[in-house]
Image (cartoon, each protein chain N blue to C red):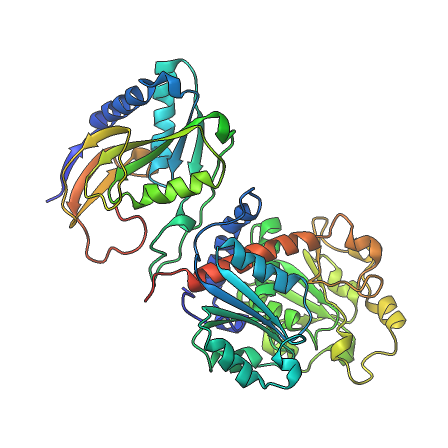
Length: 308
Length: 186
């Protein structure tokens, strides 16, 4: 059960809860494919999406998820709100709290921002990405996409390639996939590989991308997060693309049924060559569709229970 | 003590009566028989067989999951099971016969009406139930009833079917178990 809880990260979920969330999400896929894409489950609830960072798919997907459950959704982004007048996070959050929302979905550049908010308000908080910490709904939609293809997560070989250090997507997936018994390998330039990774997440570090992709069932490419790189992490993009960019020839090292994932947005020609983005192994658009279903499941499971 | 109000033969005869009641309005046809998950699902398939025998035409068949349309949410210790709805026919061209095992408060049927109308606009909707146990909380009645009985709110009506794992087909009325929570309150 996750009813009435905050969702701050994959860290808080066990494998039983993860499986139940994925099964619930599978049932929600159908709603988005109907002519009338709405069920009354969260009628009259108020959901605020509070985004301090740019986002297309996560914000849109949470907003659609709320609307398809009949909740009222309101968006606030940092630009265009009082945040741009210098209001503190604490004050913004207390202001929102006074408007009695049922859930606040937050994205913020600071790790721990979601927990900071959860400690201050009455509404349920869903973390939609806080700094380099976690992005649980992304990991869940990734796992749903994998489970649809392979019917399971346990024992699958998953390669995560790219900017591990700055990626909350990688972190949430590393935590979640380990709990589900997948075998995760990572490949990244040393400057983009945090210390203590193997001990913390039971993963293997590969010397290069080729080794990571060998026999892999799932390849997760990550976006190179240039906005989070203040120092000289990389010589230049071209060199990164040559060493760590994934091409069709590289993907041939995977399991014949192997799939390619990317959380988006893609830097075409950097972490992925343009032809693999649209290639037969790509499930990037399935991830987007599953994203709405997973977020519907999360909102429904957290807010939809009987009032306590 | 639990009492058996229908045995296998009784259930079979009840389904015959339900099919007759539906077929007695030929102007309704063509029919689509839609079982409400999960209790109504196996009964819908049996009703389809009988309607085919009586009318000489096989009605369309579907299933309806009403989890997301319930008015009571789900219990604090429950993982709701969001099931799949299957309506593999054109609703506009059919009269839908909603099928459930037990008609009680009427809340399940209210939810089912909301759900079916979100899939399209059927010509009409009829309701067929194996057991009507009374104690309605909403103004809803069935068009075809297999068995009408009087019950107490403290009681539970259990429809046991071989196809869903029971030893034999039977409808049994007993005391509601105190730890019972969530799910369909029959």
